[in-house]
Amino acid sequence: MQSYRELVVYRKSYEMAKEINRIAKEFPEDERYGLASQIKRASTSIPLNIAEGYGKAERGKEVLRYLSMARGSSAEMEVLLSFSTDFGYISEKEYKILIARQEEIGRMLTGLMRSLREREGR
Image (cartoon, rainbow, N blue to C red; front, side, top):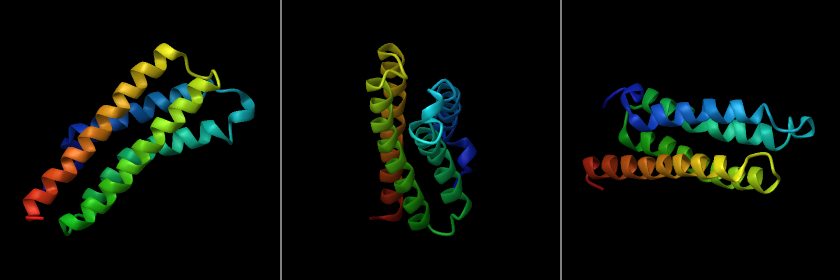
């Protein structure tokens, strides 16, 4: 099994988390412990779960569990990006760019999970 650092989905999700954290700093002060905190946690959870799964990679099943959690965080990010746009914290243009990146990460996670399952013969 390769290192998580070699995975394109890890690198893309890591960069996305950095971008989301930068953007969340611009949210209103009263959202610091609300939406801004949630969106930062969800975005960082994706690369963290990928790394943790590969760090515990005694079996493919364990990796799949963590990739599943990363995929859940990816879906959560999509909703949080929608809320952020609806509340006017992210522009429509920025939303379209971010959501496209987020959807790509979600697809990549799904593909990686499928590939690992096939390798295990499931």
